[in-house]
Amino acid sequence: MTSFNPKDISVGKLHGLLLSAVAPRPIAFASTIDVNGNPNLSPFSFFNVFSANPPILIFSPARRVRDNTTKHTLENAEVMKEVVINVVNYDIVQQMSLSSTEYPEGVNEFKKAGLTMLASDEVMPFRVAESPVQMECKVNDIVKLGTEGGAGNLVICEVVKLHVANEVLNEDQTINQEKLDLVARAGGSYYSRAKSGFFEIPKPLTTLGIGVDAMPEHVKDSMILTGNDLGMLGNVEALPTKEEIAMFLKDLGERYPNIKEMSHREKHKIARNYLSYGDVASAWKLLLS
Image (cartoon, helix red, strand yellow):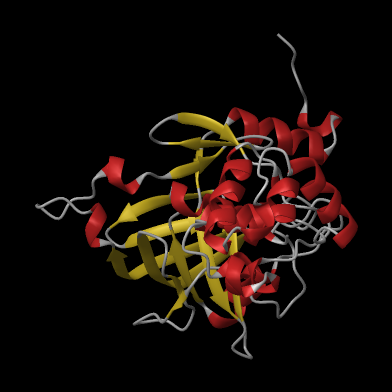
């Protein structure tokens, strides 16, 4: 057995070991708002429920290891004292991952991830309409665990209103776990789906993905492509060039001789197949052909 003294290894190394060892972890998809009314949305896997009376959730936006800065979610929670915690199910996991990209202050992650802002009843931050459970919360306290990069900040939230989608409720008003289909976070690029175990999602770009809001209308309004598909497509840094698309079509001609006459719907179905294999580049070339 290999032993590690936390003081003898880098914070990054220790962070990776802890995330892989303590897994899977539930995900708090936290929606906040700043003093100017700008929405912010970001996922956090240092999260759980800690009390039912009063109903208390705690999540922890840690200080960034690389430069010891704080996240917009923490800054908003400190000032506005409100947050909405949305749960993440498999249907929105790719969009959740895309939203974790560190866009500049003022950028709306709802739009970047192609998610719908839904007005809350008791607090100002918006709910994620696509999330099957949304919890409106008041921030009771924030406990700072340190001042260096990697230090957590425990945001202690009291649930003031709970929204549960009817389709995941049983007749006795309990939540059906299989229908809920929750996703949890593990180490590295791994996630865990309640129904089927571990799977991988490539980490979002260190540069900025184009986001769903920058996609052509026929793509982001597709009746074929799912939210997860859009999340994958939105995590590219740039769209393929006309030359790349032409070369792709030339290679694809034998398999799909009528490709240029295909409708958007037909192309979207083929693009979904590429995405199912993780081939985002080919999916984009087809969609833009």
